[in-house]
Structure formats: C-alpha cells, structure tokens
Length: 107
Image (cartoon, rainbow, N blue to C red; front, side):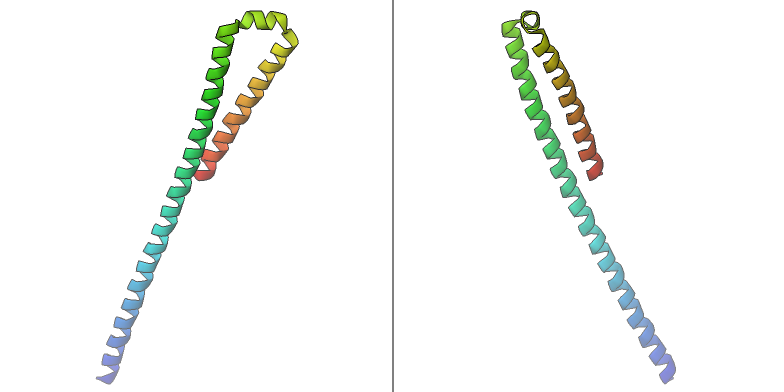
C-alpha cells in the first residue's frame, strides 16, 4: 500500500507542478502581449505625430503658394522651383518609407 500511496502523492505533486508551469507560461505570454501592445501604440502615436507635423507644413506651404501664386514663383525662380519639387518628392518618399518601416517593426 505504501507504494500506491507514494505514487499517488507523486502524481499529485507532478500535477500541481504542471499546473503552476502552465499558469506561469500564461502570465509570461500575457506580459509579452501587453508589452507588444504598448510598443505598437507608441509607434502608431509617433507615426500620427509625424503625419500631423507633415500636414501642418504642407498646409503652411499651400497657404503660402495660394498667397503668392505658384506660377509666378516658378516663372521668377525656375531652378529654385525645380529644386523644391525634387526636395518635396524625396521628403515624401522618405516619410512614407519611415512610416512603413515603423509600422512593420511594431507588427
């Protein structure tokens, strides 16, 4: 009988250990998910901030152009206008690329 009792106690102890291991695994996975959620939220906030900043700059540029007439500026300063167009294109490509990398990094 002692052997049966010993086996029962061992099985009970192993069951408790397995239960504790599973609970710890669940807590650990939950913690990792929580951290990933916050990192993703922070990255999206950063991307939104960049978008707002860019939108504000574009809005200011649009207001300036509306006030001065883009054609007049382009005719008076063709080289500067071409350089500005190239710069805006590079900036847009860089911004979109950074945003995509930032979102991919968080996902």
